Image (tube, rainbow, N blue to C red; front, top):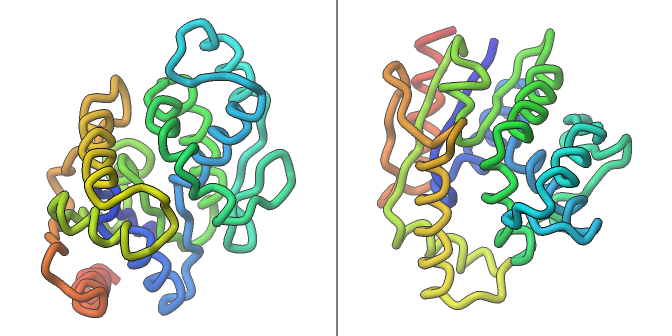
Length: 216
């Protein structure tokens, strides 16, 4: 069984997907960490994802990399990469540009499908319900206002940005995600939509689990 959860940055995808995985025993897979791991590798190589001069090098790095999900975390070139190492302001500033490249998305999409192969999985991201697993058994789209999402990121204290800077960064990320050539953020026709702006995480979890129970 595949449970696919989409939505913009800060809508609660990761927290809810992780909770669902823990309660159902399904493998939880965070697709964003695949892109973040590749972004870190590209930046470490001295490349700028948004700079056309580096495009060939960026694509070569992505194609030659091995990325997979194992033991609750992303592995890059057979080495585990801790979550906190991938949630930096520098990676935040470049991951959208990298993930906008169709060739990179093809690499990650294949890695996601391989990671979920032959096991019950709950996978979250921005095009999981529409592109990666269009035939998922359960499709959910979590949304929230920019103000609510910025407040959540600010409360996490993982960024050195001000609240206003976070709000601007999220708005720009939304713009990029919705206008990608491939894998753009959009609501699947058969996904259950849930606005989490004014809901507690417990309420969101309960509603998501009720949706899943109806499908099982």
